[in-house]
Length: 200
Image 1 (cartoon, rainbow, N blue to C red):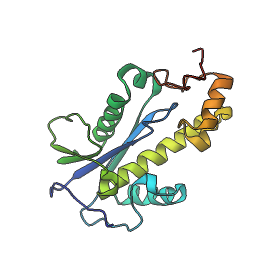
Image 2: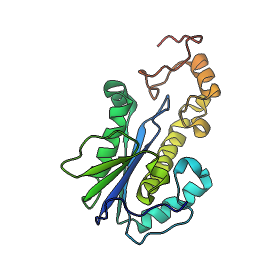
Image 3: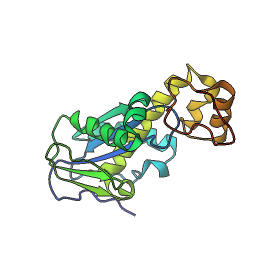
């Protein structure tokens, strides 16, 4: 399926998406991308449908060809304070704020968003597999977040974040049970299922 270039038919339409919402550790990371109207790439799709190799191949292409792009993180302490939905929206707002050019319209992956300044927006379920700018934002959010998780993996290798990226895999949960929670874990999340109680 070919992804669509534009929803609003306005110039400077920005796509935004996040990565890491369901993780037990690390930030939620969002990206905002404004692509030129003639941008085309047959490989680009929802980052979840792409291999890590393909995402890393696309990252410099998106960065070179985008009119503007930005990435931002919202970290664990903030996630615990304001909840993951609000943190995801905040990360998107922060990335849009960092764009060199203010967009005329924002398209958002998913079904929840809050107004950003007075810019009109549209939420689009599965938008990352429908629109190029959201797919590009999903690739950047995922690659930047993965790089951050690889960095903090060096500090706490026993959780194997370089592989599981902080998601609630069986291996990750067994490591939490064995070693406890780190400063990077989201304390507001259920780090272990009920049968594996943890002293925080």
